[in-house]
Length: 206
Ligand SMILES: Cc1cc2nc3c(=O)[nH]c(=O)nc-3n(C[C@H](O)[C@H](O)[C@H](O)COP(=O)(O)O)c2cc1C
Image 1 (cartoon, protein in one colour):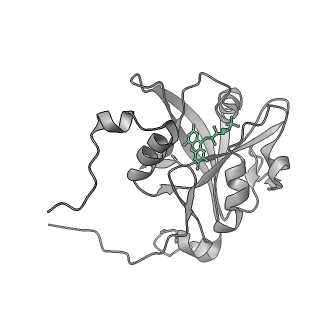
Image 2 (cartoon, protein in one colour):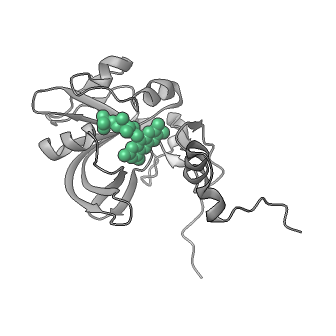
């Protein structure tokens, strides 16, 4: 006996808009919680929350994130194209409310750093600002954009040029224990979690 509720995609498509968004965005699992920080040529900074940052190979060290269709203003992306640089800053449980607020549609003259009172800092001459409150910060260089023809989303890929990690999170073998830095995780577009490590396993062999 299957105790699970079943939906055919035809049923899901008839759901109210936000029910559909919540269902589809949450079922694929816990996502990373990051703030992308940029600066335009007029020196206005920008900060926005993204739950789609993922590594894309370690040699060379690359990451990607998914951008919604560029049919409206997308300040993070426009600043990245203009300057070539951005930073990725892990969201701690302490700053989830401010981080969430960065998803509001502020105009181009308003910096979400000012609106949320998160602090912009500059490190080692990098063009884009970092979020001071974040214990894991990556300085990234834009590489390319791939368009998903089926829905207009963009996959943005970038090279990691700088890594800053609070020392007590870093293991001798390079593993970064995000739990020690109280890094949050995201479900859907508004659910914030505090993940707990169970274990680490040795490299699996047949
Ligand atoms: C939890 C959460 C995760 C989000 N993840 C993404 C994402 O991965 N890609 C994206 O394009 N927008 C994402 N957004 C929406 C952006 O944060 C939002 O569009 C923001 O206004 C973009 O700001 P910008 O125009 O300054 O770049 C997310 C919003 C929330 C609340």
